[in-house]
Length: 215
Image 1 (cartoon, rainbow, N blue to C red):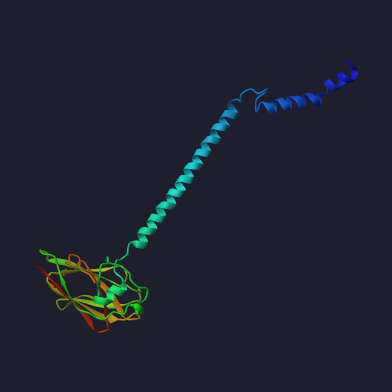
Image 2 (image 1 turned 120 degrees about the vertical axis):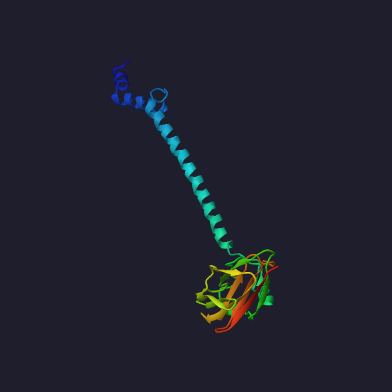
């Protein structure tokens, strides 16, 4: 071998290049040998993080779904099969206590009415559930049972105001203050044969009468 070839072959830079090439070809080991314990630990840790990330994604979408269901239950919790058009016809409708039919009292268009409410057989007491089915605008009423005031100057809201009443009895709801657009309210008597809610309007100083009958 010539002297020039020996110098070329023994250059340190070339040996380092060859060693680097072997290292790259073999991964983190030498000459393609398997990785050591540190590499395996790193791979294991990476896998654990990936699995944890997938679990977090699943939890995120589960949480979104749960919130959607909660939102739906809140939205439809006061839902009613009654419409204001039906209610205008006869003042009654199939509705849960607290059902809101309108955003404004001005759109109610109800005529004041008196009602007779038949209760199911064997009942001696019931409740009057009283609420504002339109805007919570500060309407105020007084409630009388058999001529006696049992709740005076009650501001009505969407959340029902609850009163115990005897059966039979006469319940009178008197308008005290108009918060704007007329005093509009609904009342329901659990145990009534019809199961309906009664939607009504009362002027200041006037009243609606509900005659509660037993069987």
